[in-house]
Length: 163
Image (cartoon, rainbow, N blue to C red; front, top):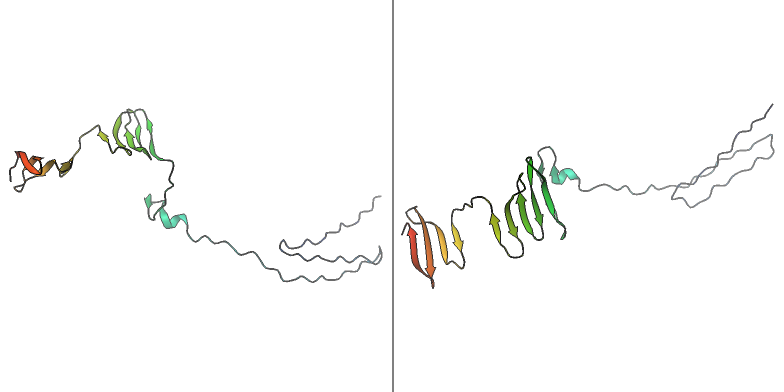
């Protein structure tokens, strides 16, 4: 027959507690003396509470941005992913902005270094001033369209509404 004896579980100190716990040894094997140990006051670590949550800046249900964001100075943003016959994409990088359609054709591009802009489709505007105000395309005083080409600051050619 085997005799089993109980295991002794030693108290473990609190993680931030530097004091040691004294163990009382039994007086004899047949008689055990127990004495309470004094537990010093313990302080819990300060809780970390998030001051800002994602809900403060993003509305995931309506898919709208509610707050402001600081962008890093490097990298780029890809919106969508070009898949033949399915979808196009828009890329924003430090070099510029470009977009391709589902046929992988560039539909517009803006060069960040030179300011050059290329558009595949129609470009529409209420008015247009080109160069150093050398060419103005817009509406005349009577509401009709006109193109005015200036030479040395004076209108030299007027096409359309002369008013």
